[in-house]
Every structure is written in C-alpha cells, then in structure tokens.
Length: 302
Image (tube, rainbow, N blue to C red; front, top):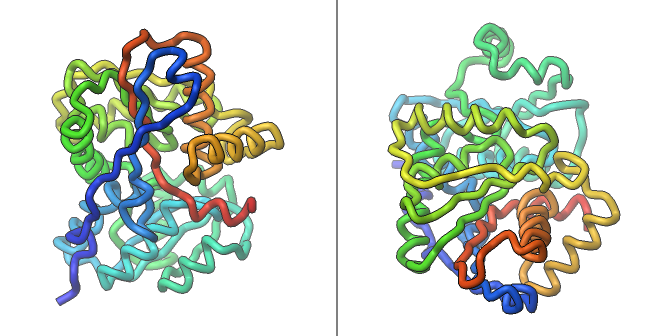
C-alpha cells in the first residue's frame, strides 16, 4: 500500500524576528517557518496539497492535472507529492516551452508537462476549456492553480490552532497572497481577537476579496476574525524582481538570518517593515508573518 507522506509532518517552527525597528516601535514579531515543514513540499504547499491528494486517492484517481507558471512552487511541490502518492501528474504550464530547474525537478518526479499559450491559459477556469483539455491530454483529478480550493482551506486551517498555542498573545497574522487559498485557510479558523492581513504579490488584486470570500463559503467557514488585503506589496508585479527589490530581499535575509523566497515572503516582509516604520501597528502588539516557503524559486535568480 502506498504510504501517505502527509502523515510525517514535522513540528511547526516559530521563531522571533529581531530587528531594531521592531524594538523601537515596541512590537513582538515572529516568523512562522512553514518553509521547514518538508524539504520538497515547501511551506504552504504542504497544507494546501494534503487534502487534495487524499481526496484524489479516495476517488480512485490515477492522474492529477494542475496549472502553473514555469517557476511555480505549486507545480514543483505537486510533482513530488503525486509521486509519493503513486499518482501520475500533468502540469499545464503557462507560456512558451522552457527548461529550468523547477521543471527539471517536476520531470524527474514523473510529471508530464503540457505547455499552453498565455491566451489559452486564461481560460483555465472555464468548464468547456477544461473538458477540451482533458479530451486532449486525458482525464484526471483537477487541482486549480496554486492548489486553492476547499481542500486547501481545510489543510491551511490546521495551522491556526498551533500558531495560537505557541503565540497566545497574537494580535496580527500576516501572509503573502497569490491565489488566496492560504489566506482563506488562516481566516477560516483565526480567533476573533486576531486581525489577519493578506499581502497580494500581484498588481490589481482587488478581485482576491471575492475569490477569498468564495473559498471561505465553499469550505463552510464560520469566520470570526477581521481580515483585509494590503495591495502595495507587489513591487512591480507578480514575480517581478527588479534591482531595488533584489537588494531589499537580500538585505532582509542577512538582517533576519534566514533565507526568503524572492516572490512571496521577501515582499511580505519588505512591506511589513515599511508599515512598521509608518506606525501602522500599536505599540505592544504581537505579530506573526507566515514564511510560505518556495525557496526552490531562488535558483533562477542566484
């Protein structure tokens, strides 16, 4: 019988973030190190894929189909976890055919790659387009881009009790956002006293309010906390790493003594520090940021 890799979860690591600006503003700040959960199923992907893979197995699926860009953390983690579950995987990749370390790993773990042009990729939520896609590449259990669906909300929701147990004084919880599934999971079980802030890393992220609300409703979540989105953390757009952000990212790594991915957690931390400098949080507050992993993406930039 194929083992369930998600039964071997490591204990959640939470560590203090020590920067002079935090002491100056009288803030206690922590980093939730989900990047340490697993070496390959990185960060939030562990929680988002856990129940998706189990659902696929229960339904007798022999193949999983999902979507992402050429450097996608989701595609990378899915390829590994599907192999561990003994299920075939197909990654529908946005854009022209390329070779890189992310996709080389995916191929190594048995994922078939199917490249589609960017115009076609925009139709990935269309039922008719998905039906046509499956006629072309074969049927499979579909996991949406980023893994964000009801199963993802359930998986990420399990983080919150552990966080609150380790940081009982928590006032604010901050998380970078791509497709919104991680934020929805945190919001779904956050206690009333915790304010949850999402930091979209793409421009024009107003649509995420509706997407996150839809995820919460699909999961039947009884939301007790307040939550909002800070739309100033994209620093040029999704996966845009200009010279200024590269310098800020690497400086924050050195100051915090931890590796950060260039697309999500580095932008979250950068924007958070800016807000601290602007006195956005009351003195005496306790805050935690989610390190959502994705360190494999550093390889394309180092």
